Image (cartoon, rainbow, N blue to C red; front, side, top):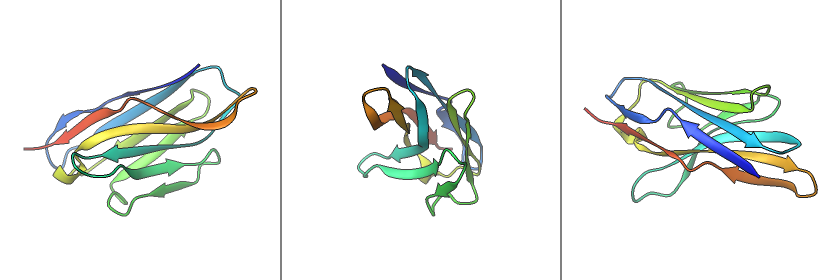
Length: 120
């Protein structure tokens, strides 16, 4: 069994910062790409940032220069540093990871999500 658990969501004012973290637990051989997605009310889920096992990063245009994704391969965690938050960043943020398990191959796993609200 593999589980992803997010933490760090909350209510902040515009311009403030927030850090989201996601920890992977369970039995697996390795973790490949990891990432963060978000879904705002009435909108489709969108990719926010991804990071490869090698460290290569990609970001949505809307968050470039404000958000930074990082991972700790020793601790099986991925984090999202969010600066200069805007009301339009309000959404449920979910982490995802491509995980290889014995006899099951590679598949994507998701956390339950954490709410981020940016409001004055």
